[in-house]
Image (cartoon, rainbow, N blue to C red; front, side):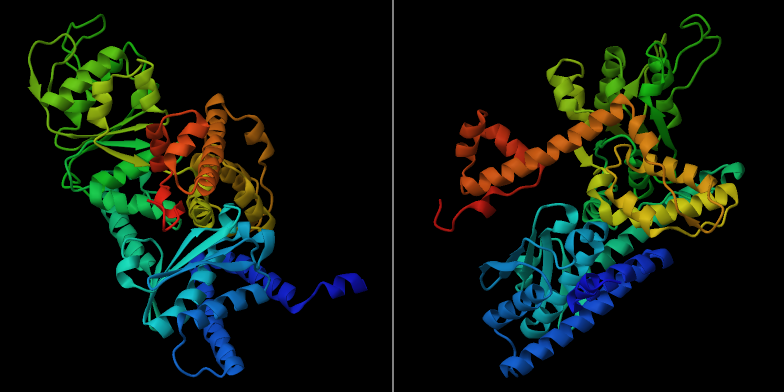
Length: 522
């Protein structure tokens, strides 16, 4: 090793490298080890940093806000960060950062943001009695910077996402999510055990991975939506798991013991879609030699999942509207009215509002199926879910192919974390399946991403382009809000659109313009 390389091994560099390597090693053992490791290191480090600060400053009593701010900024900046105070009041302390102590490699381990949360939250709780830490932006998630809010007032932090701390013990909001996830998966498991055919028992039951904040919001929405009678529209790119979410809603509903009937409307020829959905009478058309019950009748008292609902023909849309409005239908070629009682969950990977404007989808039907809208984020916006998904998929593939692969190599995991996944979870499954088939040892060491990337369908490209445009649009809005201090009218004028359109975009990206206004602004 040269002298130049030796000089690079500063304590900070060593610490960064050590923790990153430790993170990867714990990944191979399972993601629970990662979380436990992060929490343990952060809790211990927080106590050490606070004790060191007290020794240096001679402060023995509870820290005031100024001292707390000095402490957290100092400890972060001393290990390579660029943290500054953005705002401070009796309810919340907000700090921002432009350089992560772990360097660019932190994008491979966004879980490390939990270390900041536990250090900041633990110290705050010991001195103020309570803290909730919300990481609004982070370099690890490619936001270009970090924004961390430490709420020291329980009421102020009540409706905010994040980790909650009291005294020295973190009350992890994640525990509530874990409990919710366990209840949802148990409900889905019961249905799977009851309905799965004997030949399907060798496969694992459905499971939802929700370690990312985006997917945790989906779980919370499922809990709220499921017990209601409302029709649901699930939106999301191809391969994100829309049917899995629909099954979870059904499993958590009062209809869980009744049938769940999924149908891909786009896979049925247009000439047969009405018969498939609503059934037909004998002699209704050539080949109709007997009465046929459609999916609506077979889903009686249960849930009907209409995937790719945007592909329904105009005639099928009209019939569907009547079923939703009146709770009744007529089979193709029939004259008898049949009452039906079922819940309809629709899904699409298209912009239905745009299709309505183009006259390709009935506006009245759109409003009927869109009573509750649930968006499923693309995999590129769920980096925390990736290692868990990889582990789950490997377990399933081992069972399917009688293999004993335990994990993926560090290089493969890095590829997985940096690839955009235009095909989402479905693409991840396909690529891991191909790689696992050719793996001889216990670790997947190669991952061929070039072929899938080159062979993506037009639909995948459209989804990738849409995702990229959304990120650019969101970044532009945030920049404009800062420049115009939250004045939506000025932003609309500069963009050449209406204020209503801007508000619509802000709502889409969950951006609050009030956060960008000066306190003195109206």
